[in-house]
Amino acid sequence: MEKENSITFALTGRRALFTDPVSKVGGEKFTYQVPTYQALKGVLESIYWKPTLVWIVDRVRVMNLIRSESQAVRPIDYGGGNTLSIYTYLADVEYQVQAHFVWNENRPDLAGDRNENKHYFIAKRALEKGGRRDIFLGTRECQGYVEPCDFDSGAGAYDDRDDIPLGLMFHGFTYPDEAERAEEKGKLTARFFYPVMNRGIITFPAPEDCSIRRILADQTPREFRPGKNVTFAGGGALDELAE
Image: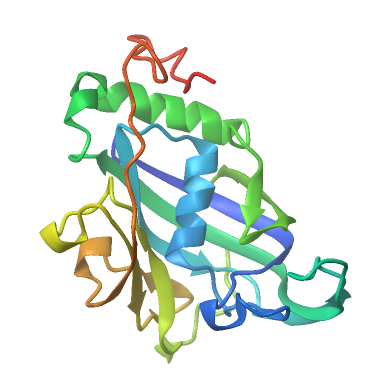
């Protein structure tokens, strides 16, 4: 039964590129076999987001066979002009995602906006409309689509396959306004983990439970001021960041 801070949805697209950080700096990009936690969190934030809350991705179910395809592209070179690169994408992807939101305890100034019922129904309406912003599967050229679904509905390609280890994988970023560890306050931190796919399902550890972490840089959280660049709409109809 769906809780009033939880949503489940189907995520589909013709192709996806969940970039391995090892190949992100160079001209050639190569995708992970499955979506990263951070990519799915980005999808959730495109469906509905406010600084009052933080989306937690619980699990993802891989519905289609994992297939990849390569394409020659001409990205802009760092020195100017264009260069020729090969990008490797996932082809014909479909996932089922389950996630929930929690309050951002690093935003006590937004405590007046902590209305679970309101945010849940706004998120549900946004999901039914396909999200508030464009959905991307890893990168902007990979358009995605979302719609409500029941997790575990339908047949998946890996329903009869037990534990499949996927090796070391990027989990996500901990931004300074979401950090729970004292040493990561005011820092940008990268997290990694070892996922295992069991019958098509990957259960993600919570961000604070990832033991492999690396602080990347100092970073200052963005300031939100109620009535200035964020609104508290009691009925939930006007909950948008001001431009």
